Length: 363
Image (cartoon, rainbow, N blue to C red; front, side, top):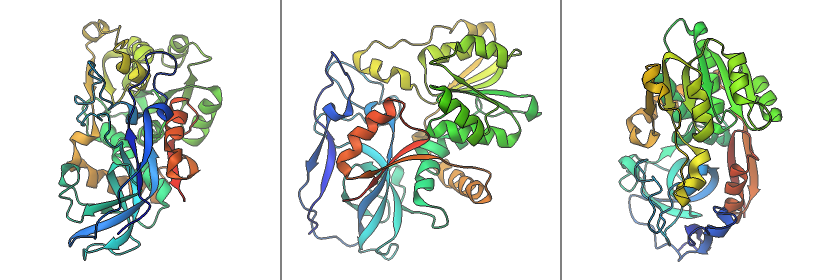
């Protein structure tokens, strides 16, 4: 038997007044019943590093309101059900020859301190077996980059999606990326720079903007809270933008659309600015859609969890780039008990992070 297990659950509908989506008010950590004796072909894992993503709130099921989670390819989180997450865990007991005690594996699933998993992946999304963590790179770096919600999304957007791919001559292509200081944005910028493109980012503060230019090699970064986004885009991309990767939506999606070249391509990989609005139903939406036919733009969307077949190849490429120094990662790491998870989610929404937010779980 495994004592001391606990996990996070969605327990309260967000209030319609005040702080709509404070994670500390809508999620609750509960004590779980002890796990049974481990069955043959199973492994027992203990959570160690959690990738804290804003998407945790996107999946909430609310009375009379469709949050859009189902359309994103993921099951909506109902009241009383566990919170889905992405994390690295350590094998603490094994009844499978494929895994030994002490192995580190990457996991998608409910945010529990301990879990039992089928070694053959029959209980995992897409039937994908648990994957051992590559030992040549710190686990925090791998969770920050080589996971579906971060680097693999960025890699597939750049290399596989028709709206994200760029044609030669690369040095003549201008790329725009919103949420550039986020986990996906950090990787995106570097992947395009490795091709020789000119990359413009958008982030919240001048401090983050300066750090991005130095750390990730962005050619220019706009701090939208203190700078006029339209004016700066006119200055930085007078001939227009070839490819626009948007992870924010709303006003920033509109601003980027206004500065696209004829025949340009826009790829939406998220809409963090709309997440609170999706709870209330007051989504702002895209207001510059008339520029799509006027400039013959191509608009596409991408969700990594619909493309599990791309994960192995993308992971291998990203690990190679990390080892060669062609790709760097940056994390905001918080150390503490699993009870700190909801606070970390609120920190992500408060723009208090640079790169991926990671909770390093210690008892």
